[in-house]
Length: 122
Image (cartoon, rainbow, N blue to C red; front, side, top):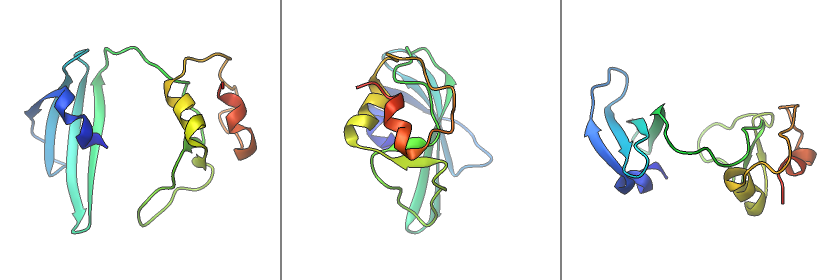
């Protein structure tokens, strides 16, 4: 998914001691700055990350909650515990990412599976 965003950034190569490849990405629209890191962990798996350095964009979506709502399961050789990630519908996931908070965020960050959709406005 990260690679799909590349055309919207000015990209310059930087040095990194920890990763195989590192770049500095600057958003063409808002001038937010991110460090991009890539490494291949095996012949079948590579990892890319964007680390925020200086954010200028307006934050949208609901405050972060835990467990994290995801519309699809994770792929890979290990899975986080259910206290970290909970499956939700596509609509619930979209609301979590895009909506402004219409209700105060939940005070209990450890929201159970059955109540996660109650924290996200419709």
